[in-house]
Length: 472
Image (cartoon, rainbow, N blue to C red; front, side, top):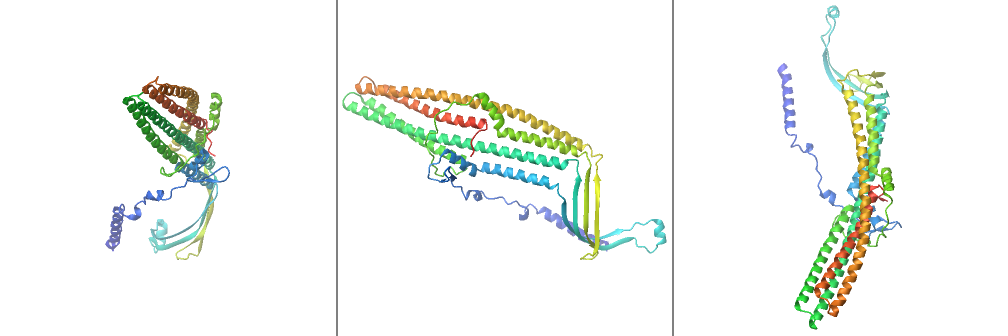
């Protein structure tokens, strides 16, 4: 009989080993990795409500504010930040749930047999008493409830930590949205700069072709040689090549703007090319530094993490205190499938760990070190932000001075080119002098385009540095 009892155990053990060995090949134990096509099938359309309630769609010029709204709605990074805030908010609900009673239903079945240990005096007086109890069926069903009456402040500390983490996630979401808005500003201005560079290249090409025709006319009149014609023809080819480069720059810039908005790079999107306004002097550096300390969302997130770490210290301290818990159970228990005998209990218990291998002490020290780490990160972040504001403020000043210098340079180059053309038409100047003046004008206009849009990009970077980037 013993061998018959042991054989099923060996069969069960062998079956379990086979299941474990084939677990890697079991499709039920293989994670379902999604296909990238599931995330590329439905590309978002560039739609965003305008200030008047209209909708800017693909094919219609998009203003900068509309591009920002599209990016905040469709950029996956922004969506991930919003989901992080929602998850942190659910953690508050989890922490708050510990203040409520925990109620549930239980049901179980057991078949058991146990040796009956009786004192020698009873075993001698009751010689017929069996040495074992069972085997018997044990069916039970009912409801259970428990409630923490006192936990030394643990639940409160956990709830405060969850709320602080939620605040940190909200601040981080604001930082992500400002980063997205900054990327859109930079990409938008870069596209405008590329379009203006293309316009300048086309104007330079038209001017080079006009000079080429003028040189041909002078050669026909015997006032120029073939070398001058060839030199002008080379200049025309070079200007055509500049147009090709400028067109490529426009395509790349448009793809970068689409990426910043969370749209496919190949989606055709047109932007409003209206000038964003005249340059404006930035606020004093001291005012920008003070604004950054108040508005930078990264600082708010870091301060919330400090508050969460402080709550973690309180939670670790609560481990040294007692826990008082109330328990209740009511149900039925019997040897039948439908038990009829009542089975209930109600009571209050207290727990106070006396020695846990110094684990509570180590947990408390770890929480204190984490708090010190977060506080040190706040100090470092404040220094970093001040440096970013200082750098961004300096770049705005540099961009404004460069824009003024570029305007003077363009005016001088245009006048030089005009005078050089007049002298060439009068025969007192060579084609080399004219083409040199033309090249100088092209360089000056290119520098002016770069300086103009660098100013607007630097202003956007300064707004982001002080935490005032518009995300509405």
